[in-house]
Picture 1 (cartoon, helix red, strand yellow):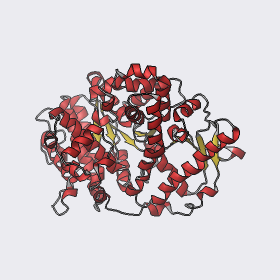
Picture 2 (tube, rainbow, N blue to C red; picture 1 turned 180 degrees about the vertical axis):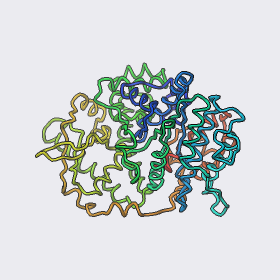
Picture 3 (cartoon, one colour; picture 1 turned 30 degrees about the horizontal axis):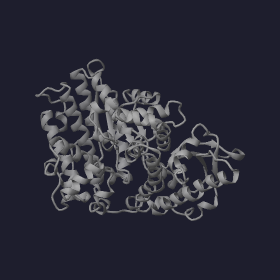
Picture 4 (cartoon, rainbow, N blue to C red; picture 1 turned 90 degrees about the vertical axis):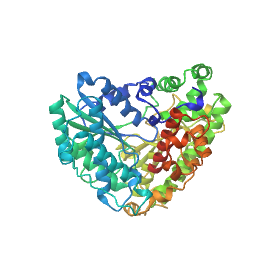
Length: 534
C-alpha cells in the first residue's frame, strides 16, 4: 500500500481490516467493553476521532465471541437520514424502525439463530415469515431514501412497527434461539442538522431498551439534540471519544495507527521521528486528520510537513467549518463569529503573549464563563463539532472562584500561524498544563456582535437542504485522489450523479474492476453522506 491509499474512513474497511488496524489503548478497551455490555451508551466525538471504528471493533469481538456469549451484535448506520427531509414527521421514525428490524433479522439469519421457516417477527407483518418481513422492510426504507428523486410518486411510509413490537419480537427471538441479548450498534445516529430527527431517534432509543436489547449510538458533540423525553443522566451512559494528547503513550499509539495500515512507512517515520510527532500532536488525537496529513506530506520530511500543516490548519480546517453555514441555515452568524473569535482573540492573544514574554506561551486551553451569552456557547459547540475545540471540563474554577467550561484548542490551529509550525508544535510537547488557560468572562467585549442573537430562532429556520446540496461539486467531497479522479472520468462530477450511480457504472473507468468499483462506490457514497450530514 502506498501512502496515497491510506484509508481514513471506517466505512472503507472490512471487519478483517478493522482487526488488523486496531491499536488498542486503555481508553479504547474500556470503551469497547462498555459497548459490549448491557448498558445503553451514547458515544460522542468529533468527525474522524474513531467512533465508527470503536463500534466496528465491538461488533467484531462480539461476532467472534458469539458461540460463548450468545450476544448478537447488530450494526446499522443511519448515514442516509439526510435524504429523508420531509414535512411528514412520521417518515423518519418508520424508516428507522424498518432499518433496525431488517438488520436484526439479517444478522440473526447469518448467525443461524433464525431458521428458514421461522416466524419470530410474524407480529410485525400479518404472520409472514421473517425473510419476507426483512425483504418488505428493506424495500420500505430504500424507497424512503430514494424519495428525493421523485416527489410526485406515491410512497408507502408506514412500517407498521413500533418500539414495543420490536422489543417483543427480540424477546421471542432470545427465548426461542438461546440468544441472551442483542447489542444494537447505531452509527451516524441522526442527521446532524435536523434537530427533529435527533429528538425522534433518542425517544426511540429510550423506548427500545429492555433486558434483551440495548442500544449504543454514535453522535457528534455540540450539534446533538436529545429532546425532552431523553435524559442522559437516566437513560444512557455518555462516553466522550477523545485521545488524550498528554498521555505518555499517545505518540506511540498514533505511530502504530499509521504503520499498521502501511508497514513500509515505518522506516521513514523512524528517520523523521520529530516530523511525525509534530503531525501527530497537531492532529490533537484525531486519527483521520493524522492519516490525511501524513498522506499529504508524502514523502515525509520537514519541508512537506511544514507545507501540509500550513495548508490544513491555516486554511482547510477553517474552510470546512465555514461551510457549515451552507448546511446549518440560521447559524451563519455564530459560525463565522466563532472563526474570528478563535483566530483573532484566542490564537492572537497566545501569540502576542509569546512575543511580549520573549518565550513561547504554552497555553492551549481557554475558559468561558458559565454565564456567557447563549449565542457564544452555540458558536463554541459548533467549533467542537468541527474538531477546532475540544470540551475539557465543565464547572471549572478560574480566577476569583468563577466557574465555566474549559476547552482545548486544536494544536495544529495553535501552531500553524508560526513560521516553523513543526518546531513550534514540538516545543509545546511536554509543556502543556491543563491548569493554564486564557479566560473569557461573562461579558467579554468580543461577544458584543452576537450577544443578543436568539439561538432558538436559529433552529426554526427551515430549508430544502437536500436539494440545495445535490448540484454541489465532487471536489467538495472528502475523497481520495483516485476515487475523485475516477468519478470525474465517468462524468460523476456532482453529488446528485454519485447518488444515482452504481458499481457497474464505475467499472467503465480504466483500471476499475468489480472489486475496485465497489471500493470506489463505497468511498464515494460515504463521502456524499458525510457531506450531507455535515
